[in-house]
Length: 134
Image 1 (tube, rainbow, N blue to C red):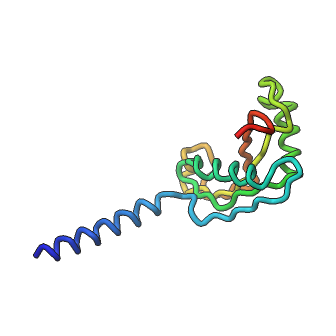
Image 2: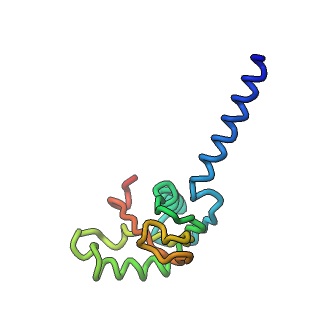
Image 3: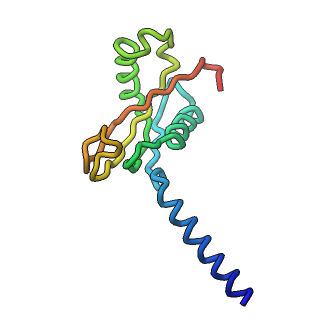
């Protein structure tokens, strides 16, 4: 009898862990570190990991994270000229933009996204303190 209870407990725990893991909507995503003359591969990897670890858009499933220096530079120019970069005294050399692709569920996530859609090149803007900061 005791063996049956232990076996049932293990089976229950396994199903619980599998179900919890399925709620995490950032597993099995495509990662593209790209090439950079501004940032080291480690900095780009850390930036991508930061976005991945903090992606919590309700009803959305992350599909891809990438760094494309040309697109990042273009987005940085916009951020510096028209976004918060124009007022928060950040230097363009410290702005790294990670692009993403994610799917939105049938209700539009939290209501701020188009239902049943895919967002491509959605930007996450990350700022380091300086070239020598962690």
